[in-house]
Image: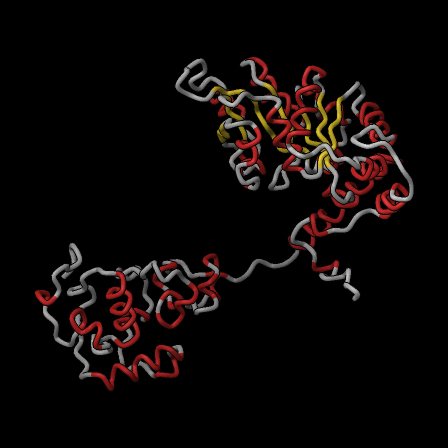
Length: 430
């Protein structure tokens, strides 16, 4: 059985850098490492080589802990920096806050993520200055313990060096530690044109999640600690989290090849160049003509951003019988028409059938055969129950009458029904 490796054409794979393959140099290094024997649990020569290379790159001795995912790197690094009663100050759009399924709280033993706003997904220093003091020393509240920034951010923005130093200084002055999520560390480094040391420990970072998977590796990231005092705790935490691989060489041989001959920087430079090229091409595309907007249909209503102004998601044809599959059955459409000049809400049974969706035409045919048409004012007799409201509003919008009833709904929407026929009229209606 053969499996195609080109599942998605490369010129269409814009969903995520996680879709990309591995650099040939890394794949070849893994294959070579599989041919022989080596000591286990990080005592192999590849792990020692990675520690040496990273110490050279960061211009000081560092402690390294290879892991299989970026989430593991973030969460274990944070766990070593905060107690269970502490809080991690991060941006609302940060990966640890949005995309890690509560793992930071789990691995820290209960520390709380507290978000700090800021433009372009970067923490605002003034907001951080207030957050580091909030309820400090109050035994009834979690205590600010660590600041976490993403470099580059999840939105593609990059902290300049002074933008790293400012929050780090605020954190240090308040007795907090600093963590950097560097899933795309190499891309940010190439963009700024600075050294790894300048962008990390020289700016006040204590622990770095050094990403490689998104820049050419297979399944290898690494925790880099600039504080020797954290080494022992990080080692035990990595073991307890299942991140001390027995055949560690298959992680570290990827990192060793990644750091050899500047491969990691070449990959990042190419990615940045192609991203800039794509951005320039998109800017050259003319903006869509807003005057060409049409009344929403069942297809366009599935995308809220494409709906004309004045239409509510719950008041479009996609939420009626004509397109109920586009909405939740437990969320009945609103009975209040939007303030719009469209004739959609005032259409009657005399509307030509070919201007209505197929389900609406069938509804109108059943309504005409069921009973004489008796116009009724929207919302005057509906009891507000979910089933009655959905049926009634759909009938009124598609036929302009209350005659399209089924026997099960006769007590609520029968032709000529008076308000007293409904024991629970909607408040403020009629």
